[in-house]
Image 1: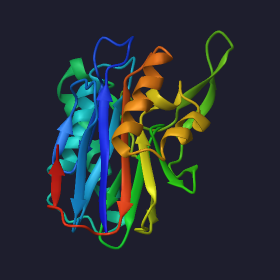
Image 2: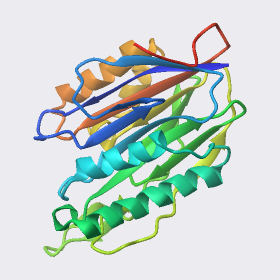
Image 3: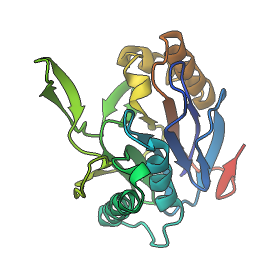
Length: 254
């Protein structure tokens, strides 16, 4: 099998900076993109695709999201199991708190994360927070990730959704319990990883309508749909397709 796809991150229409960071294999990007970039994994052994969404309203969200992506990029352990993925995430969580403790300007910085680790015999999905992972099969999206969100009562008495878990994001250290699961490597299945900047403004039926198109066109249309709705948040999208093996280098980025 091989895994190929398309990815982008975009600042949106309201934010002053892009606090999202995407990682695909050896490619890490935080600069705003206007068009997708294609990629392919072949003979993959632990290649990771993820989106880290720095917490808005907190200091240095872009630093926290970059740190998580860099933790997987520089990881020297071979990712072979859910335990390995959890270890990388927990170490990244500690690193965020350690960095914030050493610099008051970074206090409270945090990020969500959602991604896939691609192994020859399985795909390991993982998430912390409200960035999402979906499986697309037979024209239907099924969410794999678990939203760490609950309704909280504000000081004015309103009940609003709020994150219950993130990497970093609190004044003092909090351990993190990542959600993880395993998927078979199955020909024809697709996986969508996205920040809430997409799903907050584009409906699931609207997303499903474009995912049968080529990965590059689908990702571009998803960005266009978010921008058409005002894109009040950063928008990041990674779409991966599992296909029967064909000749390809281990990682190709175009």
